[in-house]
Amino acid sequence: MDIQAPKGTKDMLPQDAYKWQYVENTFKEIAKYYGMRELRTPMFEHTELFKRGVGDTTDIVQKEMYTFNDKGDRSITLKPEGTAPAVRAFIESRLFNEVQPTKLYYATPCFRYENVQKGRFRQFHQFGTEIFGSKEPSMDAEVIAFAMSVLKKLGLSSLSLNINNLGCPSCRPKYNEALKQYLKDNYENLCDLCKSRFEKNPMRILDCKNHKCNEITKNAPIILDFMCDECDTHFTKVKEYLDALNVPYKIDPGIVRGLDYYTKTIFEILNDDFTVCGGGRYDKLIEQLGGPEMPAVGFGMGVERLIMILEKEGIEIPNELLFDLYIGARGDEAKLAAFTLANKLRAVGIKTEVNHMGRSIKAEMKYANKIGAAFTTILGDDELQNKVIKLKRMSDGEQFEVSLDHIEEIVNVIR
Image (tube, rainbow, N blue to C red; front, side, top):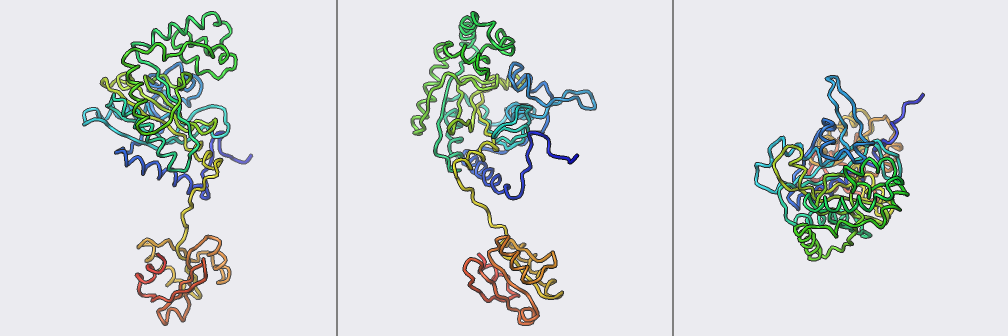
């Protein structure tokens, strides 16, 4: 049997790599405008981190994690999301002792065992940002503005922003009781998973994908009607900041997100029916994981889905020129000279290729055209003797005579 990539994984081939590089570079460049610094966390963590951080009533913890015991019989999990590891790193490194806020971003692989479908894989990649230390509503709006800036810079214009407020430990218990009261009469018609959530975390029932559960919850009470004064004021301020930035939004009480750690503001950015980005505030997670009481807000953005949407929208991602110059050669002495010249040019930033396949001169020029070299030149006895080469610009055929001994002349023509 041929060995193939595991289900739900996908190779990133060279012809696609430029898309990933462009999207990643765009994300990282805009992150710098907001004063964010890069964080890299391990591919796996102790399982307890996700049970405590993500929440043991979530689909991720209950059904989707890749968990195993290592040789020391410790329970280890491939990270299914980026926030809990970022919080763990923040606490462990005692970054809370630094001047706040701490602004972090990351680009990381994540792993979830779930049904493979369009734009969704078992190994996927996630852009994320986590900002620790600020409870101000302006920070919620800034995180949303950052996400929107990335998506618009990539060329997406057909975007919609949905926001909600999930309350806090002061007001959420009242809402949970009202929700349970509403669901009580239909308890037996809930799916088994929602029945298990009924007592511990009834709000998770609102996020169920089961059609029958959706029908039951469509007229359920909404959290916005139960917010305490603090949460209500916070949400009002977030909307004011979004209005000030001219960022249109829709209030959607149905958003609860798939993770237990959210408090107050949550949001989703959509392109048609596809969720491109989601996030919100999680003011209690740092404390839950053993750190000090400290607020936080962030988002996650799936790279595979983002690239899929860019292609769906017909947005052309610029492909970087592979080679500036291809150097052909006739004879052994010329091949050595071409090899030496290529490496001198690479050292000053010119992307250069030479013949490593023993091709004929005619075949070399065909190859140079196939790889999209911007310029070509041929080295032979005359060129070596006269110390002069002709650079041919492939776009229009114009030729430029330059000195073989003056690298600066070659560079000036190519650039």
